[in-house]
Length: 399
Ligand code: SAH
Ligand code: SF4
Image (cartoon, rainbow, N blue to C red; front, side, top):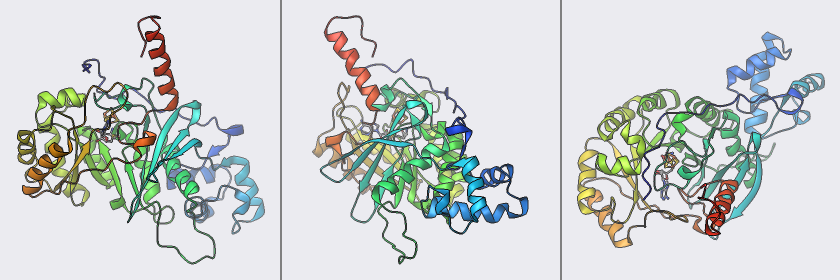
C-alpha cells in the first residue's frame, strides 16, 4: 500500500473567478438570489423592479429550464434584449454519457478550462439519485479512493455544481411542460454530494449551489433529499448544519486512529474523537434526523467483528445509520473487497446494536460509475500513458 504521507490536509485550491464567458456576458446560473438581483440592477433594471424581475427569471431558469431569453414570454421584448446583451444561461457541457446495464448513467462533464468531472445518475424503485462532484479531483488522498489519485485539482464554481443537476434534468427530459398537468413523479428526486472532491473544502460554492437547488421556486428539492458526504472537515461541519441544513454523511471507514490515519489521512488533522464531537452536534444544529456513517469494507483492514463492536461503541448516542460500502476495486488499487459473508457478519453486529446497517449495492460497475471510482477520462488516459511508458522501460513512471 502506498503511504499517504505527503497528503495535503488543508485546502490548497481556490476557485478561479470565471467571468470570461462569451463576449463578457455574465452567466446567471449559479448566482444566489441576491447576486442575481444586483446583477440585474447593474445591467440597467430599475431598482424598484429588480425583485419582480428576479422572481420571473428565477422561475424561467430553475423551474422551467429555459435557456433562451426570447422564450421568457412574460418579459417585454426590449427587456429580453437587454438581458441577452448582458447575460447568458450556460451549463457545463456533457462530453459523453455512458449507460450501465442497471440503468445508471454516468456523464463526463466538461467545465471551464477544459477540465472534466463526473456526474452519476442512479435510478431506484422509489427515487432517482444524482451523485454530483464538487471539485475536479481531490486534494485529499484517501488510499482506497480512485479520485484521490488524481493530480489535478480545482474547485467547481456554484454554476458548475448546480449545473450538474440541470444537465441531468435536461438528459432525463424532466423540465415541466408549460400548461401540462403537474407531474409529481420525479426521476431526479435526490442529490448526493458524493462524486469527485471534498465538498467542505469548497464550502461557499457548495452552499450557494445547494441553496439554489433547494429553492422552492425552482429546482425545489427538499433539504432532506440532499446528502453531503465529507471525509471529516471538522471546522465546517457546524457551518454545514447552519448554512445548508442538508443531511450529512461522513466517511468514517475505521474504528481506530491508527487505521483511519492510513485510510482517510485527514484523520491526522482531526481525529476520530474530534470528529465525533462535531457529529454529535449536527442533528440538533441542522434539525435533522440521523447521520449516515459510511464504511467501506476492505478485506482484512477494517472489517473484523472487533471493528464492528468498536464502531457501535464509538457512535453510541448519535442518531445514526451505518452504510456499508463493499470496496469498489479500480486498476492498481491496494485493497480487496471484503467477502459477502464478512460484510454480512459486520452488518449483523451493527444491526443488533440498534443501527440500520444497509449494505450498499454497487451500481454502474460496468461503466466505472461506482463510489470512489470516479476520475476524469483525461486523467485515466494520462495514467495509462505513464503506465505504458513504465512498462516499456521509459523513465520512472510519472503517475
Ligand atoms: N470526498 C467526500 C465525498 C466523495 S466520496 C468523502 O470522502 O466523503 C463518496 C464516498 O465513497 C465516501 O464515503 C468515500 O469514502 C467512498 N469511496 C471512495 N472510494 C471508494 C471505493 N473505491 N470503494 C467504495 N467506496 C469508496
Ligand atoms: Fe477525496 Fe473523498 Fe476520495 Fe477521500 S474519499 S480522496 S476525501 S473524494
